[in-house]
Image (cartoon, rainbow, N blue to C red; front, side):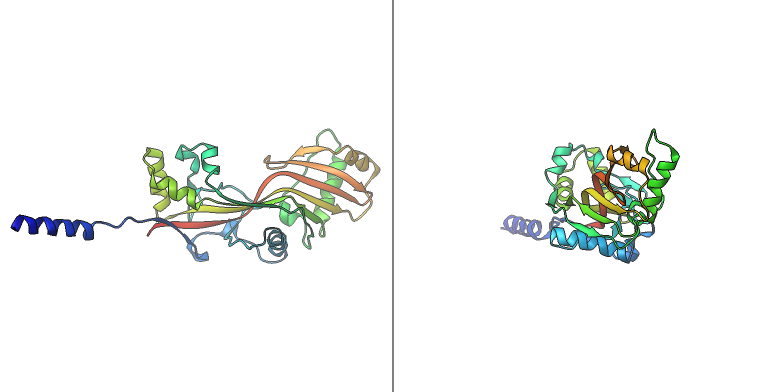
Length: 270
């Protein structure tokens, strides 16, 4: 009888005292929880113009806390130190193939091709140091193009597809089954309270800017633009093509995939 009671007490203790399994959750950050100085979302017309273009296309607002359009050093899934902003780990170290990762993304996209007039200097989007250098032409024509870009303050922007990526579910499922040294290291870095992780990104593909020039385009530059010249972007991440429209207008097309804003969160077991 004593043995039976002892067995029952042991079973009850096992059922009630065992540790409850915790789940990985991603918690929104307060602005003062991490150093946003280099990636702070600017206030004013730039943000308003981009937000209007995005919300009109996608039909919802994105709760971003970092601006990636001018300085994009992180890929989705990057773990960084929340003070130094140094990259601690990336999903490249999880040993997953690209199809394995992307198949689990929460992806929303919408091809809108809407045109919006930017009531801001074009360089606010392209970057203050943006400079085109077309090969095999004289410096005078390069200067004329760059001066027109610098002076543009009412360009029309036409976007291709907006693309929303969220990988919280990818990380949850991957961390639940992580057994490799690399996977466990990523999980340890993910749960380190000094780190944060980029869990979602809003990007846009293929951007066209219709640039109105203050003065008539020179005849040599008109001839060049009619040949639709292409050149790598200054950061080498995309290609740029120029098109002639009329004597006071040309088109600048950015071909590629461009992160605009993102959301960093902190990971916790709850």
